[in-house]
Image (tube, rainbow, N blue to C red; front, side, top):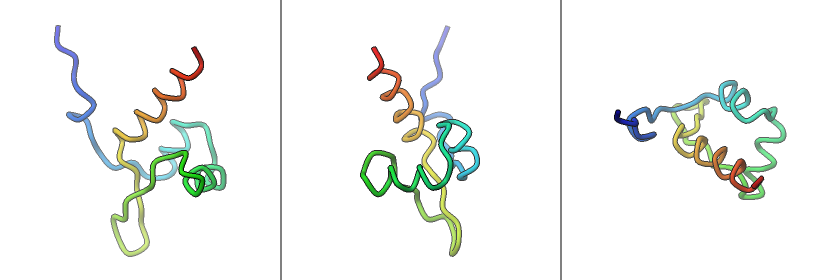
Length: 68
């Protein structure tokens, strides 16, 4: 039985998917980013940004770890 590493599934997530995964809306996400508490997006076009899926998943794991 082999577990796939997060790196194997690394991709760029757009904001709606990040919102769904984290449970936050746009304004709160950007507030957390400004405070240095959430991964910064990467520019993928002139008017488009996305988030590294591995960084977002790590952030979620860290939040769940803090609970215990």
